[in-house]
Length: 270
Image 1 (cartoon, rainbow, N blue to C red):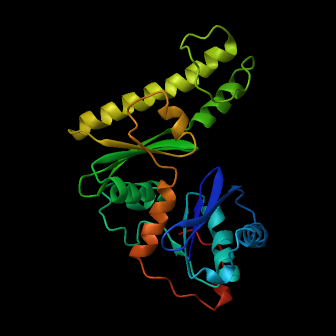
Image 2: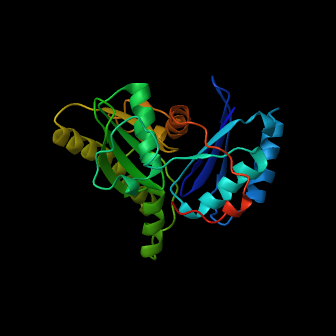
Image 3: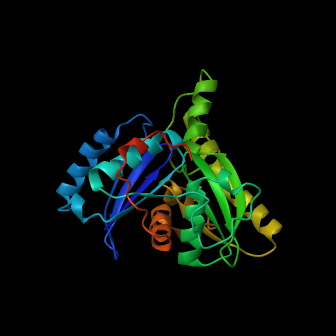
């Protein structure tokens, strides 16, 4: 089985794939200083609950946009699963060109979405990921990564609005029936929800105009289904897009050789 770890700014998602299906997917809040032992207690318990054994894991892949979390996640895989994880970075074999000024600066999650998006839906397309940041990533017809857009995520915007304006309460995310709010909360909810829908529609329209041809639009991330309710521009909702990207990346690259020299277990920032 393949162990897949997607460490984002908000959550770490861990999943196992048996070559045909996802056998389990679990989430834990991202804490960069969470140790490998703490991860192991959590993860081994969940594997056991699903009738899986850690010895069934024969390969692993890690994608993270939180460099400080990589050391502990890599040590988790080495110490508890006895395999060396493949790390999703610009220097591995992606199978497509990364046509940006500095490929090493592109977040692994964005390249993973591009890889899975092209594999599953074919290009050209734009993958919209509703995470801590809202990202738009453009994939050419041949699968090449062309770059994209990074905007504040919807939860980040809500928190900033609450913190910066003393009289505005913290609100939840929902789809208001009316655009014109009749009170402070409904006005805020409208601004957040319909404002983001307008941003999605406007940004995709501008991307398509600059690209010069229609683009398929794939939405991923926890809020994708909710925001897709308010617009027809999102054609596909794929909650496993990043995980599938990690799985496909592992299939494209050889399994790294496990080092028995534990002196190598130093903080890794590459």
